[in-house]
Image 1 (cartoon, helix red, strand yellow):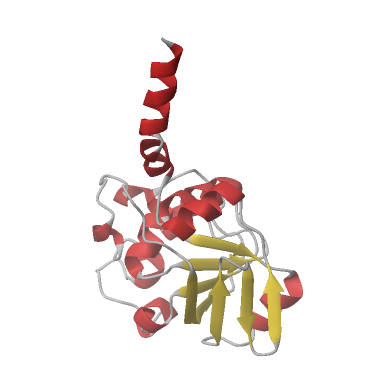
Image 2 (cartoon, one colour; image 1 turned 120 degrees about the vertical axis):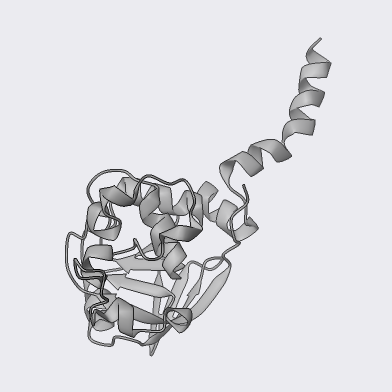
Length: 191
């Protein structure tokens, strides 16, 4: 399964400044019954975006055009809680391609990178600036590992293998399958 390549992105932000947003808030457990990724947009932050009756709330995720706001700026410790691949799937189904925070939980970060959602860690003062400017346009250059907005140029780092996969639009299985001819040649030389 290939992922959508991520080289650069210029988009506006959606700010959710709450700290410790866990995976059950991103996608409540009752929506984990599917392996289909595309149907998860309504499940993303469902309990924040919908009343018990199913009526939409006036939450910022409902009042913002996500097609032009593909970068989520979160509070500290985003994606904590249980491991669920559905969390990055839901964020991507809603339209996000990147998440920015001062801290992103390790398992969430790993699941995101494997599925094409770019997690970006920034210093607290940069996050504070972004929280004060909801909707600001940001450019993320994964090749250069730089985030740019206003007069800011902020470096970030991404695990090298995951970065290469994102840039090439491949997941780890794609990389392994592309090595099959070399593996077969090696095995043939050993016999």
